[in-house]
Amino acid sequence: MPDARDPQALLPLTPALFHVLVALADGETHGYAIMKEVERLTEGAVRLSTGTLYGIIKRLLADGLITESRPGGDARRRRYELTRFGADVARAEARRLEQTLTLARRKALFRT
Amino acid sequence: MSRSDRVFRQLLRLFPAEFRGDFGDEMTETFREHQQDVLARGGTMAYLALWRDTIRGVVTTAPREHLDLLRQDVRYGLRNLGRSAGFTAVALVALAVGIGANTAVFSIVDGVLFKALPYPHPEELLTAYESPGPTLDRMGFSPPAYRRRCFRCSRSLPRWAVR
Image 1 (tube, each protein chain N blue to C red):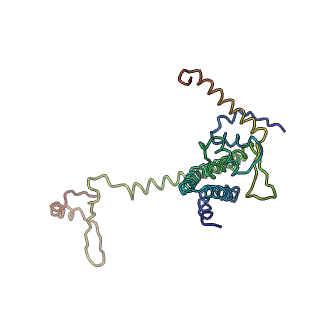
Image 2: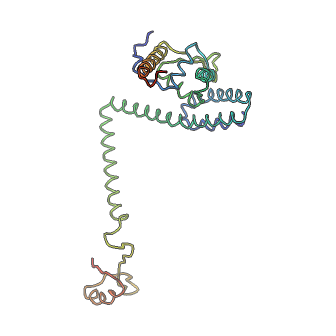
C-alpha cells in the first residue's frame, strides 16, 4: 500500500541517517553490514558506532522508513530493508542536497 | 560471554530498559562482530579507537533515547487527559490544591525557621529570662525588673529590645 505521507515532511535528514538509508539502497541487510557499508561509501569519513547505529535504526523503524525481518526468528540477527516511503525520503533528501550544492556552485568561491 | 561483552553490556545499561529489550542482544552481537574485525586487522590503536567511538556513541545516544521515551509518556498522558474531561478537572484541582498547600507551608516555614531576623548580626541574638526559683525556671521580666536590669545589661549587650 503506498504511503500517503509527504517525504518532504521528514527533511532535512541528519547525515548519519541519510548514510544509513543509502547503505540500505541495494537491499536488505543486518546491522554490522550497514556500519561497514557506510564506512565504505564514505571512504572512512563516517564511522557509525553501535549505539549511534541502533538509535538511528529505531528512529527509521518508528517513522516507517525501514522494516525489519528475523530470519530463523533470531532477534540477534535482524535484517533491515528500505520501505517504499524510505526510498522516497532518501531520494528527496538527495535532491535537496543536490539543489543546495547547485546553488553553492554558482558562486565563484566554489568554481575550480 | 567475554570480558569485553560484559563491559559492553554494562554500557548498554545507560539506555532505557525498553531500548535494551528491543536491541540489546543485537547490539552486543554487532559489537562482537565489529570487535573481531578490528582485532583481525590488528592494531592496538584501532582497538582503542573502537572502544572510544563505542563509548562516545552510547553516551551521546542514550540521553536522546531517554528523552524520546519521556516525550512519548507525556504525549500519552496528555492524550489520556484529553479523553476524559472530568478526570482532567479533578487532576488539575488536586494539583492546584497540592501545589498551593505546599507553597503556603513552605512560606511559613521559610519565614519562621529559615530566614534570618531583620537585625544586624542576627546570629548574636539572645533572649533573656528571669529564673525565679526551683519550681519555675523561666519567667519574663516584669516592667520594673526590666527597667532595673536594662541599665546593667546594656553594658555587656550592645542593643536591647522588649517584646
